[in-house]
Image (cartoon, rainbow, N blue to C red; front, top):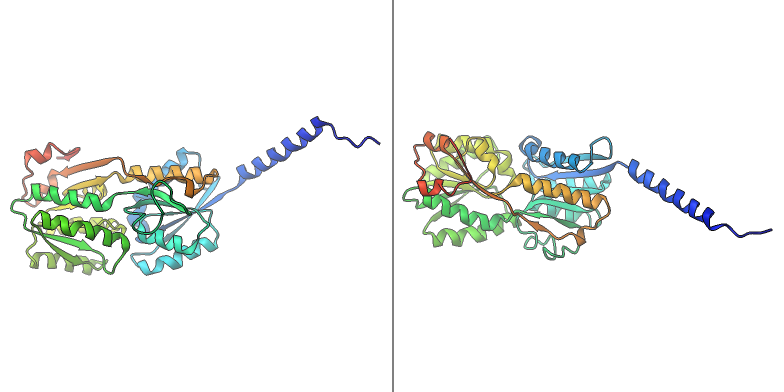
Length: 329
């Protein structure tokens, strides 16, 4: 009996096997975890950007992806538990919104890919070995928060007459991302001859009201916040209190100005979330996080709200208005 198998038959079997594997992969629904320290409502606008970009890239919920959301509800201590929960599901990838969620995810797994959206200093936080070569299961985007805070101080100095005391709202406790921002802010304030009044702010209605009362008691001339998702989620409340206490403010995200805040200078958050979606796409298609360099913010904006300025009786100098990318009248 001739036991030789024709080459054409082997090729047919091989191609059939590959086609079946492709079909199975095409039919798979990838499970994505989303981990955030704040609230679902507070982060909804950015989640919408992520989902929209994933959709443009061909990833549709219910068709080839599902997304499991976990929000710590302003309780950072819950993040490790929530990250472990996502890993146990299990998910194929985790998207994180800042340093605390990223650290929690990294602590929960060394194998599930983790994509950062806006971590300010991933190397300093110990999340990656370097921006060019992350080296582990974490990659994504860096928002350059520490450096941008210094620029915000300079803008406030130009806008607020005789600015001498600045109130800095910061969440309670400590975090690596916040410490890095303070490390940059403190000497920058000193070089601009500003007294930096650091005000620890509890993340509830009573806590925010108390923080602004403290700011007034300390006779601050203006306020700003650290770049934290917990503040982003409460941006409407913060903007309203700044108007109530007639305090000029500059914010780290444009959404604060959308809610009626005075000024914003920083990275384009929507752009960062869109680019994070591109990394999700690459990883789901087989790329390894260790091979994808951490990308830094490239789009920056300066927005001024003249309505908010009028509300607190502040006149924005023409030289500052000319530097803005957008002026809301």
